[in-house]
Length: 298
Image (cartoon, rainbow, N blue to C red; front, side, top):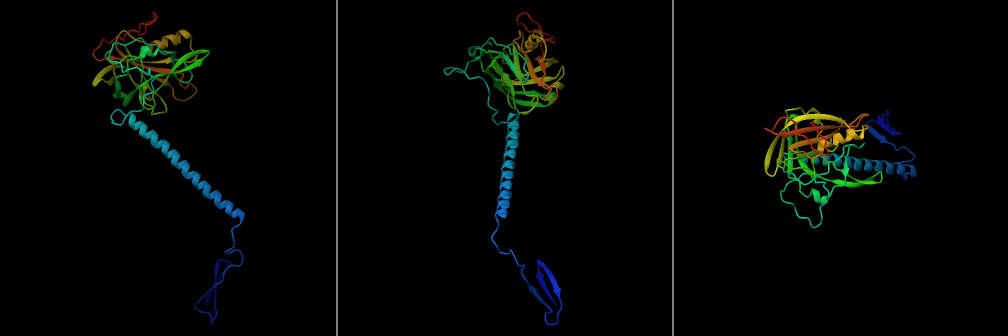
């Protein structure tokens, strides 16, 4: 019996003289011949595609890893440095300002299609008092986030220069020039409802009586929510937009105002604003009035 390999197959042959022997025969033709151009091309393309796939996998993985780290760094209970402030630059010779009474503040309007906040270009000298807030906790919706100071970018709209206010990525942003805790006016804090950490994604669920805790100047200050409102921003009259903007204008009493866009998807994306207002614990339960240009908001 013998086995003969023909055409890459083993054939069994029986013969008294060949029993127990294996006879291998090579397939005639291309064995050991140089690769053709097509074979080289396929080999090169295959390796190139594998290399591109590995690079894309590493890139996407890096993006997700960076986003996870940014979310971790923005948490209020970590010691990792918070995301960098995105406030307007100060004058080159400007020294950090000591604690003084709040300076006049230009309240942004809330009426843009991109969910941004817009105002007249503020005077930097009027916003010299830096933010003292480092952390915010809202127990009812599980928010525990660092707070960073945010400023504005000057852009031109309809031939007029305006200030477009920035929103902090991953953290909560404190509007530069609005009040600090203890200064007796409006403390304006804004955050993203979607993307970049979604820090205020559940702000719609905050209710009257919920607590807000701010960390500022080495102290913790407790505030109690007095109202949560949803205002329509897109396609409304200028008068309505002016009324909406008063929610983030200076107030005659201390309060915290939280702002985010709503909803984060769908045909009405960013057409509304969720506004939450809170006053210091133990203060009068009536919502403080906003006193600007004769308007009053309750």
